[in-house]
Length: 109
Image: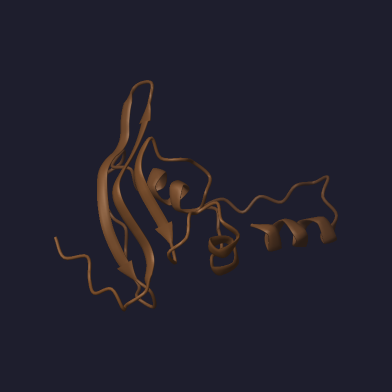
């Protein structure tokens, strides 16, 4: 598999990424390269590992095996956090949060 030339920056690059839970693998041997500035769709049947993959990229989960980088940096790095954003499927508003706290939450995520 050609992962592209060395001069083109990758938005996300995965090499053999997998995540195992007690019941089995949620994601296994996932390898791909998404060049920066491109748009892609992530499709697959329920249980294929789409949410698990995005959770690893967003630093919400750690992979059991393999490596994943976001703009060439580890998902937990300050560099990756500076260049990415997270948008949850649900749009929770927490009743106990003030407007300022809600805005801070959005900024931090």
